[in-house]
Each structure stands twice: as structure tokens, then as C-alpha cells.
Length: 291
Ligand SMILES: [Zn+2]
Image (cartoon, rainbow, N blue to C red):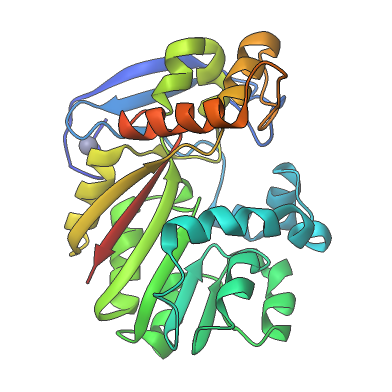
């Protein structure tokens, strides 16, 4: 198996079993081999069932527990967390593109400050809503190049790069969209070592999924950005789930979100999250880079 990020031919099989197919509780019929590159550390599987057009379908969104009609109710609350790591000052009077924007929750909160907003989203069911909001809408970054090559100031993309066939190709498209000096802020789930340490294969079966073709770590994400031509690359970790989530996993062997327990205070949970971030054991990673 050759790693598409670093070209290394030395990958080891780290898992061979059924993996998550959509939301928790759905698993593949057949075992799937998961590989980890011995050089850059990226974890991947061969794209098993999904074609690009799958992500254009409502079926995919529904499989992820989402319907275009109730998108905002589900996703508006996630925007604050995203703004925490993007900051707000980079959007004023700028051209901003969000890749994989779905119904546009994040862009809705940015559009008041930004000069122009570009929503890039393969699921065509969202295009009507995005157009009504006055955004420039495209299915893929490649499609936006004709109108916006070398003009975009900020490209954001959350929970998308792990779905693409080739992360380097994806980042090259982001690079082409950007004006010189323009910035990307891209977030993706990590291999979540703290949860894997605690739960082992039980967690692997949830972490590995048909929809995530990649699980990138700091090294493989930085390398992908360098290969795509970015400079001033910086990575930071975010722990999105608190200590209550880990306890719920240990107790119930299933994801239950940020569960509260009477014996875990908010401050302990926050400190635990900080501890995961400082030790680079957090569940989410964000890359910042410049063209
Ligand atoms: Zn590699």
C-alpha cells in the first residue's frame, strides 16, 4: 500500500474488522483493513463503497443523522467552538470560502463581517438555501476556481479533509483559490489517542468509518500542507469532548456526547480537555497555513 500523502510504500495494517458505516450502530457487513503509513503516520483505508456522487446525495446526510430541513438546529451550536479557533478578526471585509459548508451555519455568522461569502458544498439539496442567503455556491473547490482563483482571503473547512480521496490534492485546490498571503484554517478529527488508549478495539470500531478515508495526525497534516505549497504552517489541538464523554464511553461503550456526571465539575472537565490538548492527545486538530 502506497501512502498518497508521502509516497511511502511501507504501511502496516493496524486493524481488520467491521467499521462504522454512518452514525453509531451501523457497521460494515465485511471486515475492512485499516492501514497506517510508517512514515507520516496517516491512517487510511481503500475507498470501499463510496463514489464522489455519494456526498452529493441527501442519502449521505441522512445516514449521518441529518436532514437539510433541520440542519441549522443541529449545527448552529457548533459555530461558537469554530469561531474560538478561527478568531473573528480575520473575516472583516474579506472574501471567505467555507468548503463543505452544508447549510451554511458557519458562514451565516461570518457573513456579517465578510465582504463576500463562498459556500462550497457537494450536497446539492443545500444549494437553494445557500443561494437564498446570497452566497456564491459551488459543489467543489475546483468549480469555484473559474470565478475565484487567486482571490480568496480565507478558506475554512471543518470535518471535510478526512473524506477526500487525496488530502494533498484537496489542499492544492484551497491553495489555488487563495490570494497570495491568504490563509487556510482546516479542522479534522485526529486518531484520538486518549480514547483509543482507554478503550482499545472497542473505540477503533467507532473511530474507523467508511465515510472517513483518512485519519490525519499533526505530521501527516503538516506534510500535506507543505506538499500543496503552503508556508507558515501551524497546528493546534482541540479537545471537543470533555471528561464526561470518556466516562460515558467507559460505562456504556457508546458515544453519548458531552455527558454531565454529578462527580465531575465543569472545571475538572475543562482542565482534562486542556491536558489532552497540551499533550497532543486531543480529539481534533486544526491546521493554519498561508499561501
Ligand atoms: Zn505517509
